[in-house]
Length: 170
Image (cartoon, rainbow, N blue to C red; front, side, top):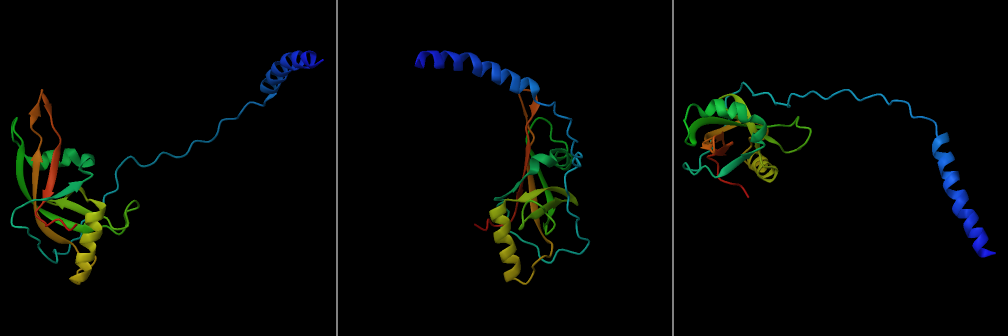
């Protein structure tokens, strides 16, 4: 008796599943979301003079991050350097970016007036604490910067990096 019920279920279940799938109403196309603006967000460079100039005596140990988005700009700022790596010095402006949607403590980095990246989030938070301690919260400050990289390897140009002459804060 149990075998007969098992055989009936084995025959009925696939047929039932087939009819359930076939009788399902067709989905209508969902409206598509508007496309996001492909241009990256860039904070405004303040017109005010930097409140302070930082220096770590030319060590250039503080790395800028997210510069991959700005490689074309950095390549232009690096200037002509042939197949060798660049070694280009520029003035940098560090701007606390209160409008950044991704990082509450973001600090934007501008070289010669052009955006090139940000401080790493932990460094940015420590930098903002330092600004607050020195009563410079929210104000742009400056330092020297060094563009490295961009040499040729196997016929391709390597990426560039930007280092700041600011003592690492963490």
